[in-house]
Length: 318
Image 1 (cartoon, helix red, strand yellow):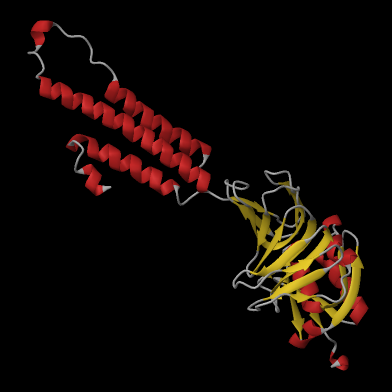
Image 2: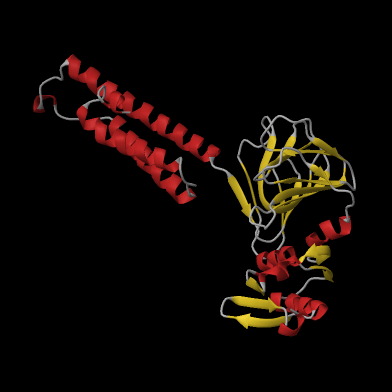
């Protein structure tokens, strides 16, 4: 940039540097429509000012302009036009490279991708993809849990999580990948079609999964683990607002409660989190409703805290 400025007339340098700085800044943040409109207006206003013909003057008011100065003035106008085009191209490139991000709050979010594929996002989950989605690969990044119903296409569809990747052409499957759980893993369950699951690093071939099958990749593992039995009702029911768990550890259930209702739940003693239980609740209204059920099922004591709830085992049960 500085090398290029040395070739530009001194009076043009501040404007060129300012325009380029604004365009570069946009490459690191999502530009708003108002920002793009304002910057575009500034660019074209300067272009008009630089290229507008001079107002007619009386011949006697000034001596003829030397040919060398006329050439310089034309050069400056051409340079301003090139600068405007370069900045507009930079803005378009910056916008094109910005990822699209879809986040689910406390509710399940259903969204359509550019290729028509449908995605259900569980509470507190996030899905991102670039605007070049579908050019060479249909690539999305998932943080949390999502159910994908992929439109068949010759362009491969790939889901990447914190530690694994899932490849498909057209199918429906569930991906659960919470990096903050006690035993973080990417778990995949297939509804129909086939998928290939593999660790995100390494060159080992992926594990093929068909309808009704599941597998997981534990954090740091070199190969997926195939699940012997899969309860698809338990896996898929969250899309309908249900909380369904079969012989699951309490800490996994409580993490789902925390994400869905944006609360904090502590356990006393900490070993309580290893208790397992089976639980089904259709469209619970709030965290307290679920926690009261769990307390009744296992004989826990439930108390409210300034920051959420606490489940504890009565002293007589220790």
